[in-house]
Structures are given as structure tokens and as C-alpha cells.
Length: 333
Ligand code: AMP
Ligand code: MG
Image (tube, rainbow, N blue to C red; front, top):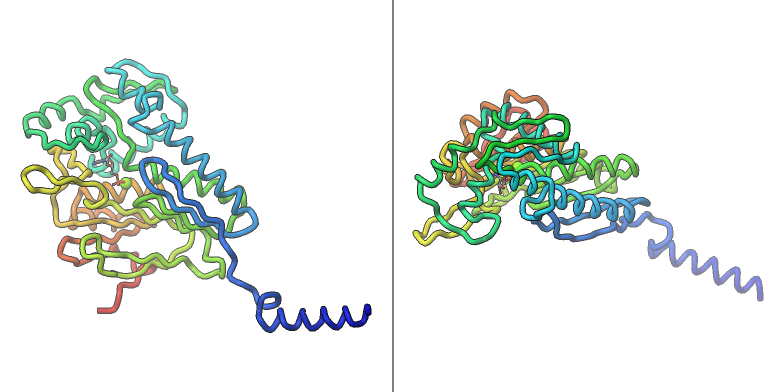
């Protein structure tokens, strides 16, 4: 009887081997989650033994950052600064350092990245979804109050000029990605993919050890333009189709503001995609390059080490920074 059992188990084992359930390695099953936070749909895919913990901690971190940085939650650090009417406000050290990062990018990009435009975004109704097309005079009057030079920071106290409001919408998701990278490092996760609206974190490699492959679509035609092959990289895209509305005049108005005019950026670009190891860097530069436009943006980013960009025009053409071809393979014509 015992011998019969043994034979049965050997046969069963062989069957399992042949049917490749037991002996040949299977594609690992990831831990997946979809959440809505920071005003965007977030898709999470994590592989490995700590995947469950990685997902839980990342989601908690995304919600924590939303509470800290959202302009629409009255108790957030940013909302309190914006409601200050020019008076000093004490905020967390984290908010102070992100503001310092924002000011740094404002300087580096010659003002194209401009985290002090929230009164302008409000005038267009971008955060309330009550869209309007403001008059030029109204925008000019609002712009008069907006001077980044006048922001004062002393320890954890921030003073912004009366009539100005801050908005970290062009950097907050990138910052969240950097926080997620820290969690992945702490948990020694080796394979994960995070998509936060326009930002993608390709952490480590695919489970089989090969780089992540991220396709690039033209934002208007949906034509497939090429593929990124990357590991431990952030890919951030800024473009006019992420958030826009149709005005009564039949024109479309999108959410990335030219800080000189207070109006949506109007140039030859449909989108800019930036590749960098840091989320904040990729996010801030994607917005800034979109504001700068094709020629200035390309010249600018070619001078920045270890950051690459793809500029996509309305007409479907695309242009790459000097080092982008190390990661990006265009679709064969
Ligand atoms: P992104 O999708 O990263 O390009 O960020 C766009 C968001 O940043 C907008 O929805 C606004 O909240 C804010 N924003 C608009 N224009 C600018 C600008 N020139 N510089 C910085 N932030 C901006
Ligand atoms: Mg950005």
C-alpha cells in the first residue's frame, strides 16, 4: 500500500513537471493596485516577496503627500500658505524643502518652471473645473502680484507675497515618485512599475532581469512613436492633453501656463517627455521644457547632464536630446 502511494506520487510529480507547473519557473505574479490620489489615477505593479508591503506603504505615502501638498484641502500646508494673505505661516520641514526645490528649478529654468501661478490657474478654473477664459487685463493684473523673488523662508516659516498663491502640481507627483523609490530601496524591492498620471517609475528591472519597456504614443494621433528601455528611471510627460477644456469660443485651453502671459502655453509642442533618475527632476523639467518650446527646450536640456527628453510636435514629428538614443528606439518608418 505504501509502495503504491509512492509510485502514485512519483507519477504525479512527473505529470506536474511535464505540464511545467512544478519544475519550470513560471512568470511571477505581481501585486497590483489602482488608487486615486493626488488628483490622478495611480497604477501600481510590484514583484517579489515584499510586494505586498511595498504596495501598502506606497499608497499610505501617496495619501500622506496629498494631505500635505494639495491646494484644494484647506488644512494642507500649501492651502494654509495660500490662505495667508502675505502673513507668515509655519509649515513642515518637508514642505519648506520642496518649496526650496521649486525655487531652485524656477531659477535654473529662467522662470519657465513657476510654482507661484495658482491664482492664474484659479482664474482659468483649472482646479475647480468651472472653466472660464479670463480677459488679458485680468491676467495682467494678477501677474503684477506674482514675484517669486519675494518669497521668504526662515526655518519652517514661509511668507509669500500678498496676491500670490503656490501650486506644486508640476512637481508633487515627481516628489511622490522619489519617496516611493526610497521605500523600494528600504524594502530591497527589485522590480516595480508605478504610473502616476504623466509620471512613470520603472524601478529595477522586469522580473526576468531585462529593462522595462515603455512605449511612447503621440498624444494627439495615438500613433506609436517608439520605445524606452530603462531601469531605475522616471519618465515624466507634460502636455496640453493632460488637462484642458473647450471654451465658448471653440478654442481649447490647457493647464500649463506661460508665466509671462498668464495664458496656456501656445507653441509647436503637443508634449514633452523627460527621462531622469529623480522624479522631481523629470517632473519639473518636463513642465519647464514644454513652456520653453522646441528650440529653446532642446538647447536647454542638452546642457543638463543625465537628463534626456523627447519633444513631440502637433504635426507628429519628434525631436530627441543628444543622449536620448541610449534609451529610446523610434519606431521604424
Ligand atoms: P505637469 O503636468 O507636471 O506639467 O504640471 C502641470 C501643473 O502644474 C498644472 O496643472 C498647474 O497646476 C501647474 N502649472 C501650470 N503651469 C506651470 C508652470 N509654468 N510652472 C509650474 N507649474 C505650472
Ligand atoms: Mg511636471
